[in-house]
Length: 138
Length: 451
Image 1 (cartoon, rainbow over the protein chains, first blue to last red):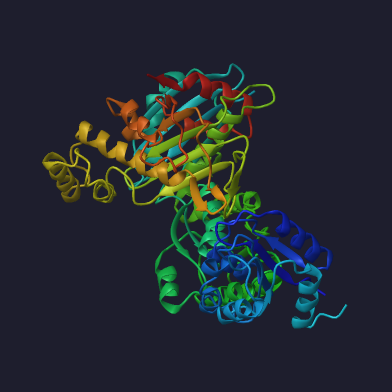
Image 2 (cartoon, helix red, strand yellow):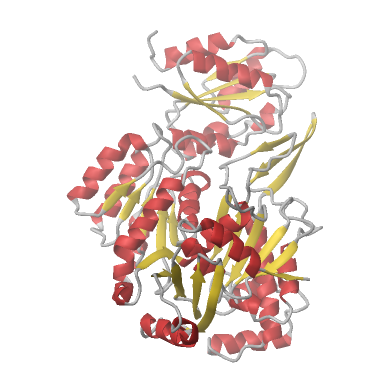
């Protein structure tokens, strides 16, 4: 079976590179075709890359607390660009300071994300969810 | 080692030179006003007559020609995302010496199709999707193009996964379709070499005939290249040299014409300084860009419009622009032409160069580059009439330098300037694959340093 493509990157002006590399490694290891856009990625770059590569999912990381600003309108933008069936996952330190995760999750779901992960999540959980959502059997 | 008679036909002047590859010598150089609108052969005969004293004493082994006649090689590029496969396709066309007369992204619609039908292009380059990536859009576009039953050949350089389907649907519609590697096989990676070679082959196989150049076959042995591709081959050798003849290193070049301005940059390595990220498509080491709206005649108005705030845009300039508009062949005002050429140089090189963007975040300042960093380039070569006829070519070429008000544009602070004052670059490019050492030596000898 052809590998499913996942576009990953760290959104906004965020330059945290390490976690992003771990995500790339783990997805690659799990049998996905990974397009890693690196750090400081704009919404447009995510969308452009997903269109050209026929991606099944976009993994957005944000570690510096400004994700809420950077991700605003992301789901709508994807829809406008015709990416109706692309899964959107987001994870990291998604807001500044410590706060309850539930309202944060709600906020990102409203922005159009399918799954939202709190700080310290295990990437393997994300991969398991992705396989479930894409109906990929091991 | 043979002696060659080389011609460059189709631009304002028909240029010719005789090269003895044994002695590494240019035996004669001559040029004459073009006769492209009547019969190219007459122009060639005129130039040969000027070289008669030399021609009568030697025997020519081969005659080769590069051509930009009948508007040069006109191409249409079709891609998916504007900044990705469409950009890759456009860069492929430019690197093959073509002029891109139309570029289209995403799904083609009927009005765009109409434009393509009316555009009279020589070749259409269809791309879209990385290998294994999107195929719906490129298949849609292939169907639309096939529905035109076009006379021009189509090159398919998109997603390999749907290549068979696309070839078969073009075959069914009796469209001449050839395939090559995807111009962007994976995200951000440009791969144009095969496509470029294919464009050259098609140029020889079909275009030369269509443009009435095949009648020249009695006088010449081979129409080898579109002129800009020949220029590019020559500049590449001048920059990189060969294993036995050292080149002059990274360089930029500009060719200002009446309607368009071409900018070239040749680099040995892709420059990306420490702690700077890269965004988008990696541009080629040997890059050519064509500005279809910049030139000193047909495009003079556009250029002036972009420079309205400059002090040189005065009454005199406005009068001159009016004269050009009334009669494209009006008398040349060398000073005004120099100003127009300087503006062309300034805008075209700024568009050609990469950008460095600064991003401020809670974590400090971050930088990322898009396009080519040309700050370390040390040589600029001027080609073409407006530069060679100018009284002060230095003032034109200096417009390449980085602008202190725009430090984000990655152009050099200091350059050495050379002129192709004998009009040999385009002709010598014809020998690039046959006699590279000779070409490097002759180019180095014939570039006039200006200070």
